Length: 190
Image (cartoon, rainbow, N blue to C red; front, top):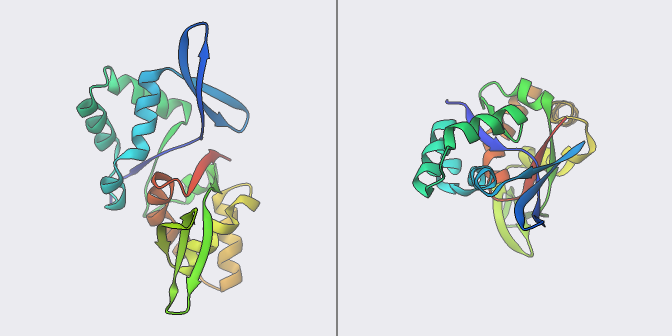
């Protein structure tokens, strides 16, 4: 499987200062002020939901998507976003290093499962289901905020259900891009 791309940080809205527009993205120890073109590329990492859902949203997909949007200087902008950590690549088949360097914060509502579909757990906003996952992805998603890294949260969850952490991690890794793209959670550096 190719390395996938996900945005990192929490969107904190537009900022006008002295007639100039930036967009603020919150990180644990700072706020990044992104000019409109850089923000457009960062935001595009959330946008191509089809490519994200099909687990094919790579750096090349991000660059191509932004070029189709008409963003100038995309290659340089993507390089700067990668260097700053506002966009990250990870291998869903070997996500351990990525998980050790990132935290995940759920930002949607947990609806749980239903009597007629007990193995499907729903994540929603204002009652509208955004994403359906299995119990293990749901368990990591709903408890990840309590751990200093995804790796630690996955290890703790895996120990509680007596399943190898690598198996739980791979399941979560396959869902992570769609969870972020659907705004069911956001990533931060650990």
